[in-house]
Length: 243
Length: 243
DNA sequence: TAGTTCGACTGGTATAGACAACTAGTTATA
DNA sequence: TATAACTAGTTGTCTATACCAGTCGAACTA
Image 1 (tube, chains in turn green, brown, purple, cyan):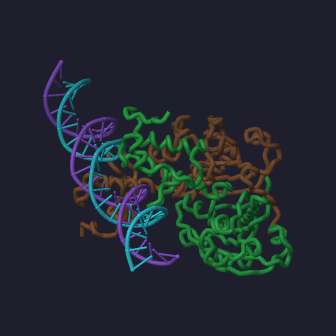
Image 2 (cartoon, chains in turn yellow, orange, cyan, green):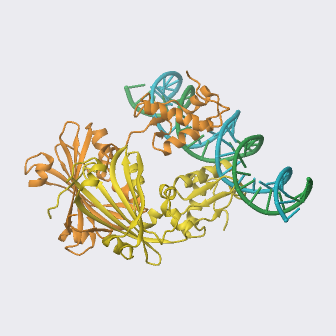
Image 3 (cartoon, protein in one colour):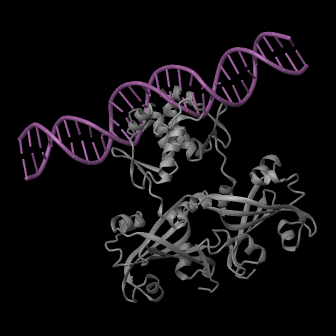
């Protein structure tokens, strides 16, 4: 039941190895984060060259199934949180559109929760929250204004450095909290004073407002992200009439 | 001015080659569709192994800069039309969300243009149009109903086989038409009879209606695509109140 | 005990060569 | 003339080998 490799198959050997490893991951025989056998080990057990094994593994790394760590080994990749949640990150979204995404942090402060935000985060009005404001750019053109609200006593010790890295990673790996799911609301709106300035559009211009609530495994709300997208740059013409 | 490769640089040779080729593409020295020097040629002129050249080229193929054609050569890739237009294709969109996209063709027919469709395509009511209806699925769950309308005398000879491949490629390469730009309209709506059946949702469920108009370089409208997305599966809660 | 060195593991880079599969043009043949 | 065979080019696959560069723990040393 071992040697599933057929050297005389018309299918390339690297492809057979590739499918074999992928199969073991999908069957759950290889778990997320688990180390797979080393390249030399594969080469020996199948009686093939290490370079051929490398070709198979390289493809799987490119497809996101595996990650390599020099000196340590090759590991089954973790699914991205965005993928788990079924969310598209701004970065990936823009890349898919062929644009160069970037982010500018414009505000990071502690403030008091107001009505809608407090209820969204499941805390009391007046409780401390972190408020992070970023501009998302595509090819250096401002595309969206994104404001993230987090309950301060849930994500203790948050600072500017973390915010500029991966917030989700910090929450999961450092704080040990498990992100579970998210819901999104989309609504059509118009740009207000602040937004029009940052996005360099006229006040009153149609914008897309997306509100995302992210929840932990235990049901507590983790964050509320409110994004204002320029309708024009997105080439969305928002008209409110019903079909 | 030739040998830009430093064998004793800490940067890997394959990386240097990679950057060199990428640079030539970005500077326009290598045009879209143009064949680049063969792997053996690179190996010889730089005095390195062909496998090292292959590593560089493989990376560029993975990044979408080049495409290989066995027996012919390696060519500078065409930018995807979706990228040119700044549009996200359903396929890419779903992949980015970690879902497996698929498409089911449910109707392909010639019919007569009615009011809104005729004006959108810049033809007269009663003129012949192709009408293509597809269901877009993610992980085999129907996500959207997509209807494409094309003026029959503009895209002559369209058939089911082409429709199941790349329409844009056919239009550009076979018909010699140049796609230029597109606009999108987004509006909130509710599912009607037909849509509710195909998408397996209740009549009256909120849906996202996206209308895309694609235009040729000469300004003529090429197609009108009307997509009905399930609001629930997209986890969008559409509410129409203004901010 | 604390620190260092060493060795055995990992993946990363690079070589030189071989043959297969495919493409396209040329040449020889029926 | 049409067809087949050849040829020279391309990428595709695979081998066997070598050495470099991190990682980590065990053994050695001050």
